[in-house]
Length: 279
Image (cartoon, rainbow, N blue to C red):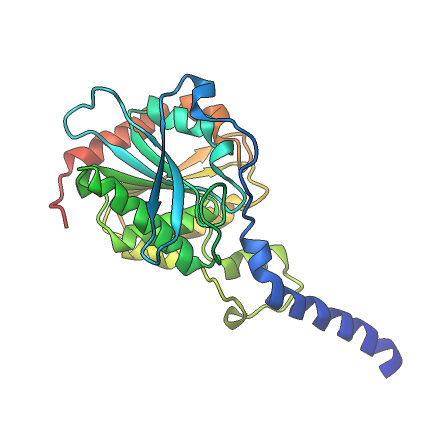
């Protein structure tokens, strides 16, 4: 009997230990600069900028600004997903500009042209906070700043909103936690919460924020099923709204961005009218 049971048990334990040891490689997929696509390809003015995280790591980003900003101009801090980078986000930058945002889109450490340094949830959170502070140093107030996060960046964005006091928060393709994703993808693997080193507990962060939330999720998302996005929304405190991006997959928002312009612009204007004192 042992002769038949030991091989599958050994194989199972090997996979489980492999997950524990190499989970960072599943979560973080940093890429060096790949290609030269910039917002200029979409006739979008922009500036390449560098700024420094609190631990001294230098980060690279794109800064886009309207030439004649309106009073109380909205500005966006964008947190991208785990396999994205600036050169893949030129179109997204153009879309945000068309929505009326000034925007800072940046690469986390080890991504793109940002300085190489160890990645972790804490490190990404530090990078996002540095981006937020860079925007504030440009003269913007908290009640002008919006945060948008996609995929893994949705958790970074949600956590950032607990450390700051933005006007509003956009989450796209959000998930409750890395543990929830792991259970969804590997239901046969008996993963326990204590085995997860970088937890990204979005469902916790959305209960702690102080700003309005607009959450988007692709109807046909094969990376983070929409049911997981709804779990995040169910836990989130009010005010909040949930928008289904009809007919698309995880990374396809640019293809439908124009369809959702009106609800996004309405959300922006509602948040801007709800003035909060700067912190």
